Image (cartoon, rainbow, N blue to C red; front, side):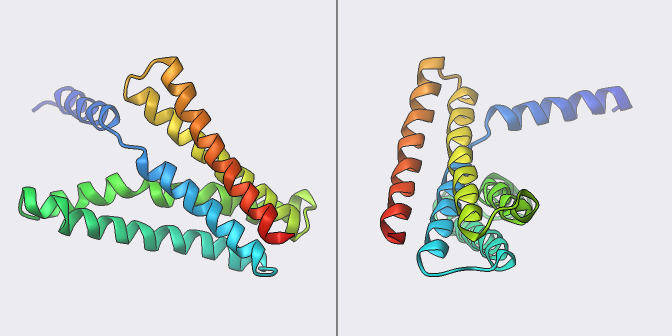
Length: 173
């Protein structure tokens, strides 16, 4: 295969991956990150470094759990495991970890914004909820949904995020 033909095939494979991308993990990971922030804020003060690590490590642990469930649950019944399948599942579940990065980054940069710990928690929670809404809208759009469906998906996830915020308000007061 010539270099241009190889590049064209690689582009086609990348387009195929984008077309079949599943953002469920991103929505789930954002909800998980919001829950971690609420839990951290409800049980006392967490230093920023600990909260960043808690967000990232929780995302990694849940990613491993989802990969394990996919490989030894539904996938094992459908086909045998090989390196390609394992890597595919790892890649497909990676949005769980990716969703933890923006709230962790918000915590990390919060001192530059002059935020105290309470402000840091609110910023991280807001970023997690925004991520949840964004991942769900991207999933609906990628699936070919109408703008109405995209708006509905985003709205439902916004409501779920607001419920998480209500939990934070309830738990911290």
